[in-house]
Length: 318
Length: 281
Image 1 (spheres, rainbow over the protein chains, first blue to last red):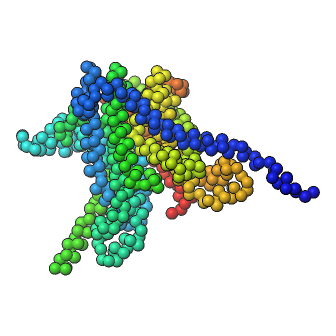
Image 2 (spheres, each protein chain N blue to C red):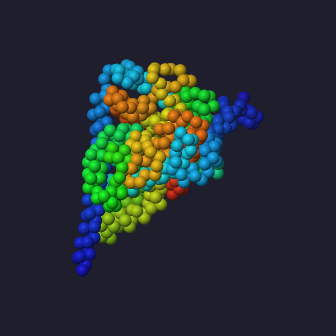
Image 3 (cartoon, helix red, strand yellow):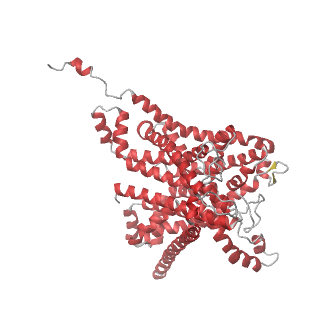
């Protein structure tokens, strides 16, 4: 019996073909949950924070009067604290992360390159609560004894140094919080920068050396210009991390809602305020004020992260 | 003159080289110091009670059993949700959505979610699941953790699927396999180790997360398997104990921090080994 044309065209569809569109839609639905989650975050934070934002209006951003007893909330302290600690952390960790990344790409003895590279990447994954505990129990007492007390006693009354160092010398202040934050984002930034430096074609760098350039000149006039755009993106990613970091900061910033007046003054960040007070918020307005702070943090980090992603391009994982 | 300039250039470069050596040394020393104090204080805090007893009242003997069990339960639940959603979403991005406008939007939002502050995820889940139902629950905690894990898994799944050769897809088509069977039986299989790595990285990330659990699963003094009630977790117990004024509790907090760090680092190393076996570099 020969196979007829009819039999070929009439051949049953492969088993399971009917599920093709179903599977496609299930996958699309999964992708849509991501969209829904982010929209949900924005909408719910906006709704939850609305009572506080509408009641206090602009003074929510310009007043430092954070008073749960009288139900008056001005969030300038935590908002400024978040920005100050994040930028200080970035300031401390950027040169070091840059140095580490250059070291790994240019100077590191071959035998150490892999171990150090792996160590840096592993450290980027250590949970932030570990850094927080170290900050609270090891770094803060050390800093208080060996830096704060000498600095404060060396300061002449009325001098600039006295102004910058006033506060309680207990190690819980915005400077120590920034340093712990800096240590925390350091491995992350170093790992990302190293990845970027490795994308520079070897021929380009070698031609630099071939022209008689020194290592410094190769780094500043070949490596950096080549990765300029993405490097700024990587720094912004680090900043985004610092902005939203909760545990490492909460332990050590001292938690006061005033504007920090000096480096040794206690302060607070948005994330630390929420972590500390959310479960103790007794009135609806208190809860709403905390959620409003969260909304502000979301907006800030959204802008930072969006810029970072735009600069990095969508290919860059991490 | 020329030799002066040359000297200046090499001095500058030498100084730069020295700077790089020194900061790397300082950075590694600082990080080693942190791990060292974690190790010393953590091991000092671990005894047989740590794994067999629940959260103590201040001043009495106790351990971390309920917190460890709680963490394992919530992380496991979160991973189940996250793997299903993340792998499907990643598959959609790589195989169906590709470069459509909607796919690019989802990809962008996924990247944002990937680095969004975790404390905000906690606030969102509080507003979404805790406040409406008037109760903290392990389910809410797991949901918050899942939200953190999903973007990581989506991202890695998409990346490894894109690495699979087109010939594999075409081979499936040529055999008359339905598209979804080709994806399941060919692509997912060949991308398996990559997807597993993504899952492990996500697990490492969520097992140390504290902030999203503070307002969702809260804390609980006793061993508890009821998913609709509060549940203890290692990070939250560490947070509470570390801020308490009692030496015993602080000791337990260090023990907990060491356990978490070992689990996280171990998972990361495992992920690395798996990737390395497939793509020896």
